[in-house]
Image (cartoon, rainbow, N blue to C red; front, top):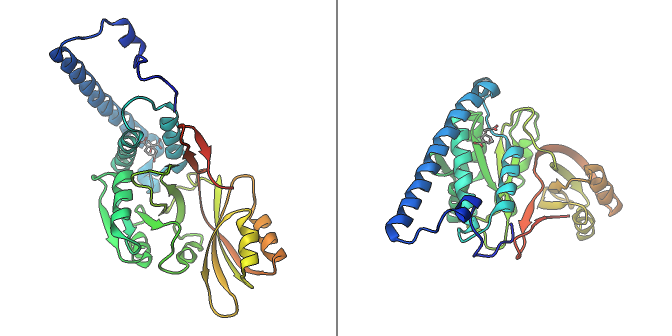
Length: 299
Ligand SMILES: C=C(O[C@@H]1C=C(C(=O)O)C=C[C@H]1O)C(=O)O
């Protein structure tokens, strides 16, 4: 976020205009700004109408462009300052983006509620608003069934505490949906919708972001040593898989690293890699630090 003292003028035009002194004058300023914001949103809609033709969304089915969305959210956080809470600015832009994506090609959000309904519903509403239809499912299998029935829809699955076993194995087939984003886009300690969530969808072929690459990896000989070796290089979610120290892993490989480095580390720690498949990708994660700076998260 830009560092500015609270006394700084909001814009150069405000700085040159004489300060309004009366309550009616201040309310007139607010009405002018509200009307300008509404007109700008309607103008944004006209541009989206033209963009639909350029993207030919109707042909490809999915309008999501996760890389662009992550970039827009990072730029919002970087330029934000003043008394409006960042949470509010972030949720407004998210609802604008999600709703205009919906206007391009209608979709539903299917969320796995099995690790808690309130936090998941907050994440879905914060990131997708109330115009995009929301459907809760008790388990990730229900989410994936819904995505099979409606190829343009989007699923939300808790990113860190798998309640339904190694759900990511269902994303291994080439024509299966893939992880396309990790929410929230910009992390911080007190994020009001901070549940770590993976967004799952069938991406447009050139829309999958691969800054962070996600792999489903099956190993035998899984041990604390193997977990530590892989954990030095990548974020790993592990679920025991069968007898004899087997495990199903979801490995998030950050930019600058490769899955080969991770599997070499696993083998070096005594594990055997039985299978691996890419199951998605998302933008590099960023955290807002206490002084408002954006810091890459992870390894
Ligand atoms: C507008 C686009 O489509 C979607 C909607 C966006 C928006 O409203 O800003 C941004 C990214 C896409 O998910 C685009 O591809 O640029």
